Image (cartoon, rainbow, N blue to C red; front, side, top):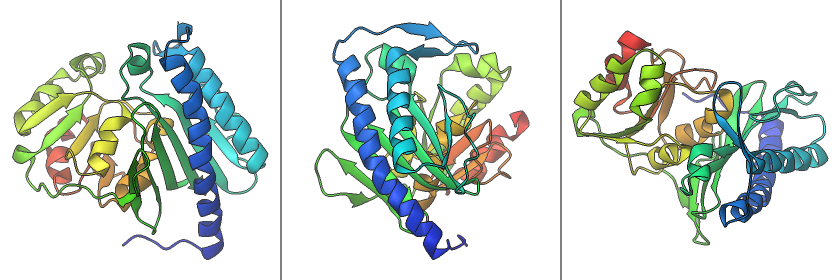
Length: 276
């Protein structure tokens, strides 16, 4: 049973989630500017992942907006770190200005902006914005998950009803990531266990799970900013998130993650357990 949230805390979360819509749109304007043809630089970070001018400008925009509207809130971001992670209010924002930088660099529009909101380190609200696709999803614990395409009326987001892994469509990342983490056999086992797999790992795949278009996503490596915004949306849509052992339910600190409709989750844990 999902624990209830104190009324005042929930009101604070709602206020921040409302602001997250506007903040994400402002960051999206920056990304659209670069995606439409404005030149940008690309560098490799210490871990080998790329970062662009657009990543940094979008995160700076998000940070400034949060600092002005909610001074004292903690903040963790992919590009500028977590020096101000704790804050003084109990609320913390977890942001990824471009989840899917490789897609962004290559002109693939499936990247997204992720804005998660925690209270006492619990992921309780989240926003996913896809500026090129003009699609978004959001949720607050206890208030349901919502999905909108362009200017259509927001609709309730719900996961699929597929209840067997051998009938499920599962997205994951490329074989190279599994091989780099020294468990290529997990990739092979996953392919054998599912009806179909698709090899794309940007946050758009998690959106597809939250809206019932695919059944699960398997990730071999995640940071808190990759999943913090997604966990409350997935849970409110009726799904489940855990690590590969199945024990760390809803924990955005899990390095290896499964986001599913909940019905095929235990089967995925069984398949991936040997490499957990």
